[in-house]
Length: 318
Image (tube, rainbow, N blue to C red; front, side, top):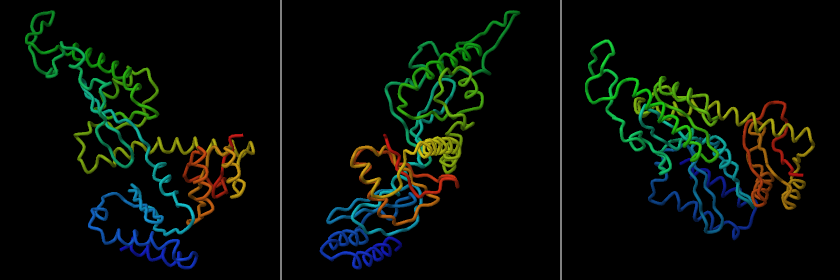
């Protein structure tokens, strides 16, 4: 119902601004989406962005709830997509146990298994002499030397093998990360041993001090999102600091025509949109974003501090 009402709002705007021949086909597609037998309206995520032009229709699932809005103009209103991407905080989640690791692609919005042949996810795949059923509490000892009877690994061997495997993971995980960081999960002991061994800086300080499969499934995503909040805060601060330096160096524009000209000349390196000041339906900003994307500009959508007064800024490369 909300979608249908927004389409009706958009149709009224189109009738007031443009001749019917320019928009009639688009609204046929938009209304057909309401009638279509589709699972679209049962989709579990929080929001949708629907773009229509002529007979073309594109639907994007958003994993946050934007303010409902209908925009009609000569360019697409793509800002919600960048707000969506800016909130994701994509990481590699490593769920550690002493002899294996489960890897996931994770973000604030979801997680799924990460498949790769480059990481041995079980110690046994690396070293044949490790007994994956080793139990610290099983076995008998006798004599002054504490002789161990039975086929299972001694506690000190288990510890040695854990350290050996964790060193392997610390060396191998950075090779499959791309630009992502690693979020660690597991028992407090396993995470502590891993951090003590690690020589890399790719691991987030925040962590999930519990094996993932021991967390109720309905609570897992919330725990992941909570652990990623510091990463989002750090990213936002870094981006704001970059913008403030550009403002101080007088390398910014926030007038529509100047920004478009800079984009056409290939000088527009980034566009910052200040959600705290953003006016919904600013089609001038949409045209700057579209032109900037065509010439390789990055787009950042975030809430900037009160001392950043503009709604948006274009940062010049030179």
